[in-house]
Length: 497
Image (cartoon, rainbow, N blue to C red; front, side, top):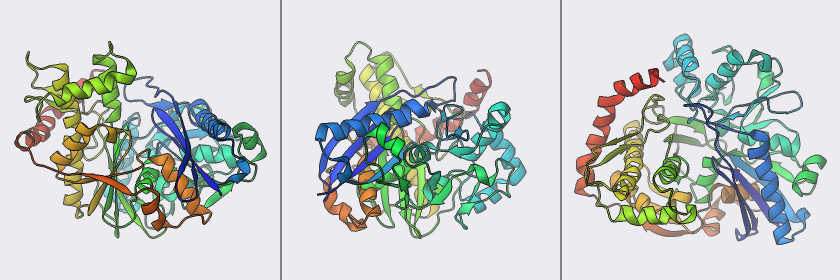
């Protein structure tokens, strides 16, 4: 009997899973942490405490609770939120908090200047992605400009997963899927770093490029002492959490789409060719020769947490979502004419508007908390449909959609998404997500599994069928129109902050 270990660092919680041959889960562990918002438009984590600290806690807990010999763990794979930006010094010590993915919009000025200097068409052609708040390159430039004293001490620019890899192995490595988000520093055709488009950083400051299941290194003696892992255990290069989530539910070939219900909605569609559209993101997939087109909202699960914390304070945290769900189910589809724009941290795809604002429109004295919560879920579902329509306009519709993540427990959210988008969704037996995908990727890396095994590791359990509803047919065009007619007001409000 052998085991593989998968650990994923999320926006609000980290999870780990120990899996034996054949995919059976032996043990799970989790640890919560906070997203730091020091000012509007910023989002951060503490790399040492939130990323590495969670990994150590989870790994030690899994090993101690199962009582297994750590030497029986054949490989470790990690994933984490991404793309993030973390500068470290020559000793690998973080110089600032980790700057998070597209929910952090601090580099808007740098995005505008890079677009003006390079040209949006050139960036899209060379890098495969338009510059947005998801891009790491502008955030590096922001750091260089605003912290010259710390920039002088910077030896490497890492992301969340590559920091874990470094702490485990001492190696600086990053997978191609993650690196493609470093625009304008990654050439999508050459699948290599590029430095001719802009003066942001030198080649010595970026990690080595690898494919996700390549072995980046082995657990060092120091890491073994901290984590309880056996020294010499193979560690994969790792990847972003959404990619590991997709793997966990069987996203395998062209036309497969993952719909991840987490702190954000994140979508990955595999294709046999590159989809070149500035409204979407593109990256090499986890395995050489494969392509992925991605999209994501800025706030999804994060918005439901915000709603709970603001409007259900009298409820115990563990029961709050159950109560809110019952109240929302009592509200009719369309929430009695109430529309929510879920742009509470700006928005990523497809509008890429850091100045977009969250909105409840249509409130009157008959509306209840349940109506408002239903409007939140339907607003997220409407924004998800906007993404699905964008994929179709870019030239590829999904052949099948596989849902994953904690939000799959929210049946109303799932159903509203299918009904609004017209997409059936397959829900697999195991929905814990990225950490399980990591365990499978670790098994692939050491020959303990082959790609087709995921169908037996995690079989489909049910399908959420799409059913059109007149209320959604009426309100979705109004959802789109509401943003278009208020975007200038949103921008003006941002300027006043």
